[in-house]
Length: 180
Image 1 (cartoon, rainbow, N blue to C red):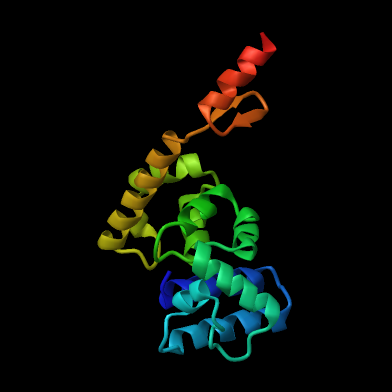
Image 2 (cartoon, rainbow, N blue to C red):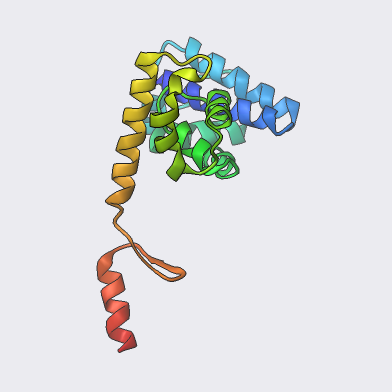
């Protein structure tokens, strides 16, 4: 991840925390960290991979660990927890580049859907251009990204059997053999 992508995730965390009326000092810390990462003249991800100090002022140990994990792995626990609390349609939209929590909420409210399955259908039929802040070019980009994400989900490498989800089909076959 580059500095802009890391800062975008931190700004998204900041927005979701403030929407939940979270601790204002924590919100301010994430916002300050995102701004300082944007100002940095060095690659934060490169420093994190090499195990060097990040070189960002005013970071606590917990925020440093979060940014390091985000820079190295591309995800962090705080962000995933906050995304998990959102409706599925907003979660799907948050994975589209350039869409933050406020725009995702506005899209789902205007399209009147909270389920990810209905999102693409309503976006294509009702028209994303009716949503304030979305023009024809951005609408095409969003619909293309949503179509790609649903195609990836359709090719999911897991098998569902009632309440159990097997990560690989070979595990499912082995379980069936053991049951027989």
